[in-house]
Image (tube, rainbow, N blue to C red; front, side):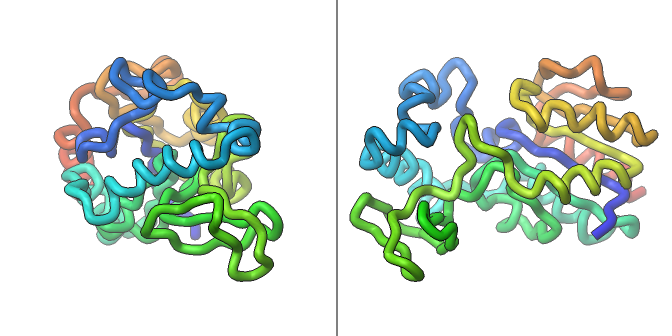
Length: 231
C-alpha cells in the first residue's frame, strides 16, 4: 500500500506503557549481556536462558498491566482517518500498535508473541512461556523467538524502502538513532523530498538529519501532531 505518511516507532513509544527499554540507564542491557540473549550465537550456546529472557518480556503483554498509550491510539486514529494512507514501521516487538487499532504495520525487528522454527521458518503464535522442549508443528524443528537479533537482517526492508521512497512525510517517534538501517530512514525519505520530523524525548543520534524536531513525552507530542495533520 502506498502511504503518504510513514511513521517509524521505537522503544520510547512503548516505554510510557511500562515496557522497559533496552538502552536506558535502567534498561534491560544493564542486567543481560547482549551476546547472551540477543544473538544467534547466544541462542545456540544457551537456548534455555534465551527462552527465559523472552518469557519474562512476553508475560508483560499477556495477562499483564501493559496497555496501549495515547501515542499508540493517536497513530491508529491517523491511519484510520488520514486519506493519503499511513504506514507504521516499528522497531518494537510488542503488540501495542495492534491493540490500539493499527493495521498497516510492519514489525521490522519481529514479534514477541510469535515463535519461528529454526529449520523451516514456520511462524506460530505464542501467548504462553516457551522452552527448549517446544517443537515446530510443521516439521518438528526447534523453535526460537521471532525476534531479529544483533547480526541478523531486519524484516521487510524492501517494502519499507519502497514506502520511504514514495512518502511525503516521514516521522520518527521514540527512537535512539543508534540502530541501522532504521537510523538512516530519515535520510532516505529526505532524498525524495519528504518532510522529515523527529518526535522524541530528547535528540536522537541522528537528530540533525531531520527537517523538524520536537521533544517531550510521546503521549503528549504524538496526539498533538496527529491533531495537526488531521486538521
